[in-house]
Image 1: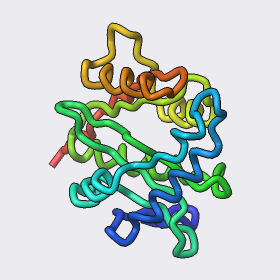
Image 2: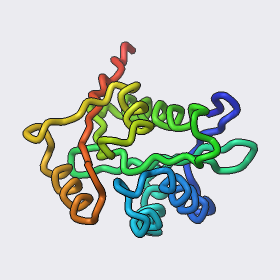
Image 3: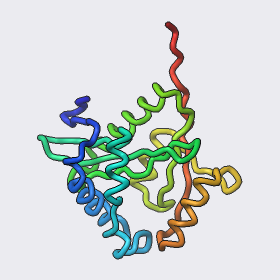
Image 4: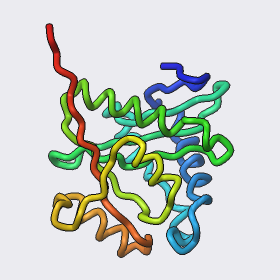
Length: 177
C-alpha cells in the first residue's frame, strides 16, 4: 500500500536489524524522566521481531526504499495489543505513524476484532495526540483487562514512568454480501 509516497508492507526477516535501529532512535525522543537512558537502548528481542514477521503482525513503512517506521501488534489471549509503533525522528510529523495505525485498524476490522489495546506514557504528548486522533480512550483502573494490567505492572517495575492503558473500540465492517 502506498500513501503520501510512503510504502507500507509486511516486514521481512531482512528488515529485523533496521527495525531495532528505528526503535532505538525513536526512543531518543522520550524525556529521561519517562524513559531512562538505559531502558531506551533496549529494543524488541529478535524473537519478538521474528514472531511478528512469521505471524504477519509486523508492518514497516518505507520512504525512497528506506525503512522509516514500523508497527507491531500481537495477540495477548483474547486481546489485540499494539505492542510497538515507532518512526525515525527525522520523519516525524509526516503521517507515517498514522498510516501504519490506519492499516492495522483496517486489518483488525477485516478480521472482526472488536478492540485494540496499548500501553503508553501518560505525559508524552506526541503519542497521546496520535492515539486520541484515532479514538483511543484511557482505561480506568477497574476497566483494564488482567493481561494489560500485568504489562503495565512490568513496565512500571522496569522503571518506565507514568504509564497508562488505552483502548480503541473497533466496529467491524458489516459484510453485506
